[in-house]
Image 1 (spheres, rainbow, N blue to C red):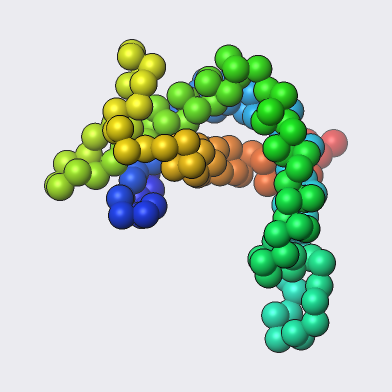
Image 2 (image 1 turned 30 degrees about the vertical axis):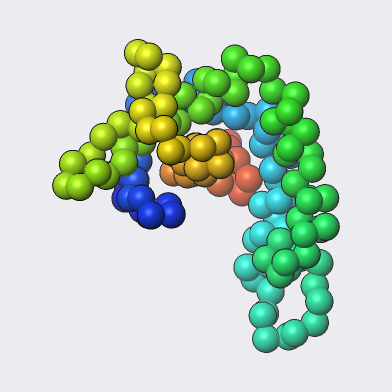
Length: 156
């Protein structure tokens, strides 16, 4: 489990079981090719020396160049737009199903799987997406990093 703050609230991410991870990875997998350029540019920007001061297109996502960021994320946005409603709802409900929000000293689920609804009226789509991305990153991150670096392929 990991706790983190998002806005004025504290959230906790639980663990997806192996079958939830498997099914989530199947639904997210078509988006991976559109994310590879984003990962590569962010990785390049993290390795670049910030003291150089020169404009570098690899730093665009982190330097406020919204045009370059929009161009880089366009295939990802198109992928989300083309995603069937059922897939998008599966991804969000699976991810939000393992998130809790702290209220006072107690933790409460963000999502009710039985009612298929958000349990907090103040959670908007922006917050839900950030929570879902965080769950995907934490739950599938090692698997996705292995795919991108080739470390998950068996050696023969």
